[in-house]
Image (spheres, rainbow, N blue to C red):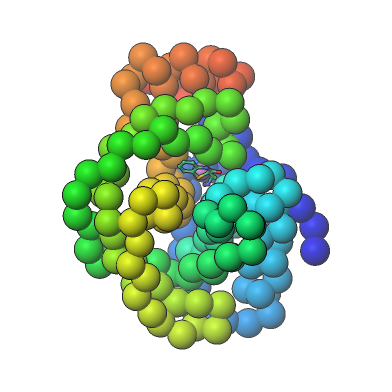
Amino acid sequence: MPVLPILKYPDSRLHTIARAVTRFDGELNSLVRDLARTMYHASGIGLAATQVDVHRRVLVVDVSESRDQLMVIVNPVLVEGVGESELDEGCLSVPGIYERVSRFDQVVIRAQDANGDSRDIAAGGLLSVCLQHEMDHLEGRVFVEYLSRLKQTRIAAKLGKQSRRPR
Ligand code: GNR
Ligand code: NI
């Protein structure tokens, strides 16, 4: 049950679109355990499979202070998003960078759990923002892509290699 290495921006693998989970088997359970362990080890509030170079639609979140409210989310779909929230976001794949991003304030997400059972999750506040941030990862989107091109270029330069050319 290892702690997995987290891909760091800019890395083109972070732009991979994840595929749906179809088998709710031991392999999925093992991925979920590794994601949770890696998220807690890195003190993150969420982690998408994309960030550990597994391109499946799986993510974990835990926004609790006590770090004991793990949510496992498989094949999430945004059903509803309302209002606007502007929070400073960080990302384990973009270490040391914190920037304001505009998101929905309240969301309803339809998703499956690790057993394949479907449910709707209504979220607001930090959980809502975190879910939107993680679902972006599954689509190959990193939060810095919402920032100005100038900021993106500066962040890419600060974090190392320029593997992505500014457009
Ligand atoms: O740990 C994390 N904190 C955070 C703070 C504000 C908005 C989103 C996040 S998610 C981030 C962990 C991460 O990179 N998940 O993909
Ligand atoms: Ni992230």
